[in-house]
Structures are given as C-alpha cells and as structure tokens.
Image (tube, rainbow, N blue to C red; front, side, top):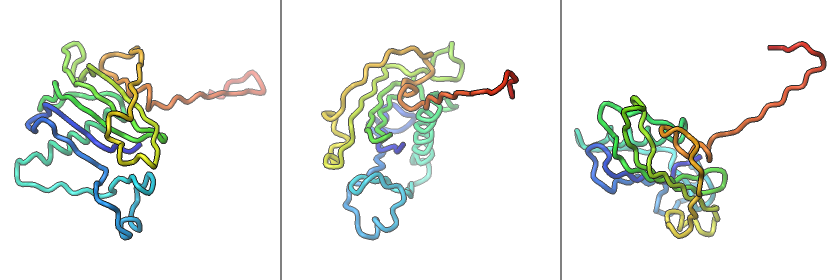
Length: 181
C-alpha cells in the first residue's frame, strides 16, 4: 500500500485545507529513474525520501503526527486521541492498494464511552481501478465510485478494515486423532 495524498481540516493548529501530496508533479529525470525505490509504474511514483523543514513552532511535528496517525488508521484501523485533541478532524486519505486507487473520508470524534479511542464518523470510501494511461487523474473525484459498505464494526474501528484486512484461512489435516496443540 502506498499513501498518495492526505488532506485534513480542523487538525490541531494547522490551517484548514492542509494537504500533503506524496506524488510529485514534476517530471522524472533519468537520475530519478535510476535511484527510485518505491515505484508503482513509470508515470506514478512515490518519493523514498522526504524532508520537512521549517521555523520553530511552524508545525513540523504536527505534520509528522498527522502522517503517523494516518498510518495508524491504515494499519490498525483504530486511533487514540493524544494530549493535543484531534477530535473534530476531517480526513481524506488517497492511497494505492492492490492495483486500485482508494479515497477514504472520515471525521474523527471523541466519544466518552470509547475511552481514549476516537470514533470514525461520516465514513465514505471510494474506489477506482488504476490505469497507467490515466495517472494524471488519480486525484480527480470523477474517476472514483463510492463503495457502499454495511457497517458492522464498533465505532472506533474504521471501515477500511473491510478493504485492507487480510483474511487468512488456515486448514489443518491430521493423520491420527492426536492434536499437536
């Protein structure tokens, strides 16, 4: 899975409309092609190294925390509120997974019955097949179709669980009646 873009509104002290693009808009040079590590295909790639530079108290740590929180959502499908509240944050995450593009939208809300965990409200997930010929349109809303998923999860578990969670089925066969466990 590759994160392509993160958009956030009402995130800590950052301005609304904060967005982080991990897909460069400049053309690749031959040097880029030589040293490129995280390649999806010839026209869509993700930088392998990123630098965040700014003055003191300009939001560098907040930006890194936002990226960390997005990885937590995509990895464990849960998110705990931190000392600096992120309740009320609206997120839009665009990512590439198994040859498809996904755009996930949610609002994080703190509910007292969930303890430190945040609930995911107003969740929507959109999907598009990825075509190399349409790589310039990956952020265009027109190429996405909304997935209608029935929510059967607790409020503190994201619906991304249905898309990203690997379901592994194991079968065990025994020649005799003794169980090895």
